[in-house]
Image 1 (cartoon, rainbow, N blue to C red):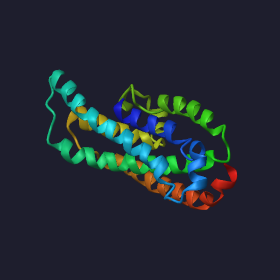
Image 2 (image 1 turned 180 degrees about the horizontal axis):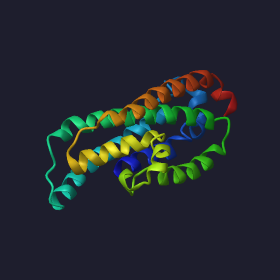
Image 3 (image 1 turned 90 degrees about the vertical axis):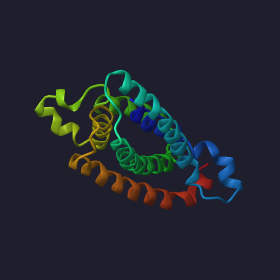
Image 4 (image 1 turned 90 degrees about the horizontal axis):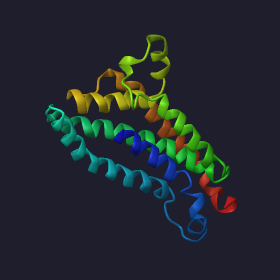
Length: 188
């Protein structure tokens, strides 16, 4: 649940980052991408602070946290960070022009939660539905976190779809941001 919380909180809080800072954007010249990306970083720190709690829970449950975590946490963290950066830059840029997007994002995140194996493992999903869940980029990331924390195993080749989607999300998010940021002041 902690990796999902990082994702959800970052998207929800960063969506209005440009729209709610209109006065600042109009008056001061600064790298505007800092506004939503600082939210991601803040929630990323919260997530990293939850890792000792996860380690304690794993230890209490009778398992031992492994040194594999030292490799796995940065790998999964970077992929999730890249995915978040792309998604947030795209959504926050569009939110300047379509203010109701914030409310739609809340609903979509609720739905996204249930089609992502956060509270259930992918192994219990019927095979006919598993192929659809694997199209969700967060499925392989969340499964990677689950495997790391519960089985002390590094992410496998199943992580490639998330990596490719994260790279695509960064490209689309940056492109959208670059093309729209010049009109932020006029729209706000």
